[in-house]
Amino acid sequence: MKRSVYTLEQLLEEIKSTTPSFKVGQLFETIKSIYPDVRVPRSKKNITYKDVSFTKPLASSRKAKESFLKEQSPLSDFFRNTGKGDFLQVVKVENKKAYCVNLSIKEKFRERFYKEEYIVLDYMMIANGMVKPFKRKNIEKYFND
Image (cartoon, rainbow, N blue to C red; front, top):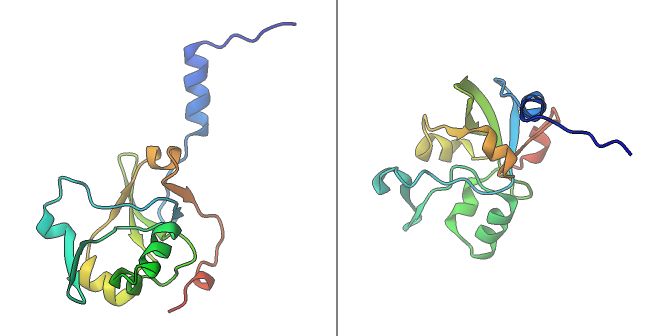
């Protein structure tokens, strides 16, 4: 039986050919929650809603939403859909990073707490299972405003 031997160059070329690419308009679903970077000042990432202060998630997983509902967290008010992870839409691509808006946050909360704030995705977030590409066209059926 003949064994195949790959060079490092061949393996790198194979990885490059399977690396995803970001495109404006592309949709992703969050599998794990995404919070602001630890370097973001507390005053910018923490909010108060219904007399409760907390760090706002930039994007939440289905599991996190279930937890918010169970704990009767005021955060459960924020989401248009509680049965899936958040839907992120790419609005800008720059330096192998995708800048996304969270389509799952209700408009009134997006305007108030997330104005001009992007979720930045990179390829590692896909590789480590934080987000996955969402292929279906009509995501509006997942929202229950």
